[in-house]
Length: 112
Image 1 (cartoon, helix red, strand yellow):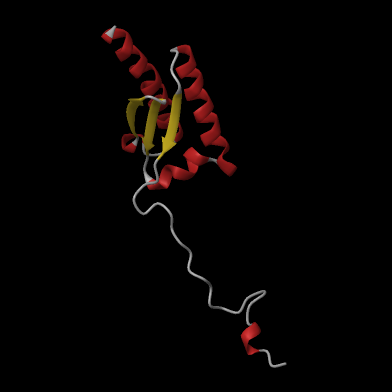
Image 2: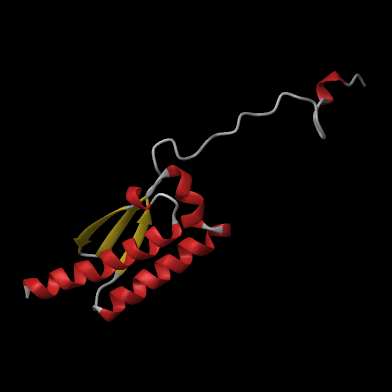
């Protein structure tokens, strides 16, 4: 029974690593953690901050596709598998509000 469980772990975890490493520029930074609880299997994916755009894709299309594929692998092993894409340290860069009076700006100077 333990060997069967280990086979399931390697199936979904290794599959995710294989797919993600093929997509990113820094495959050595790809890390997948696997946790099993009462809700099923949770795969947590960590990648280099520069590769997040490739994993998320345009409007999240790539992330949705990866999640679908991982769920299918889980269904073949009779397990509910979910994917959590973890945001890297310093991942989101907050843009500061622009101070130049471009289009739509500079209304403070108007005197009515």
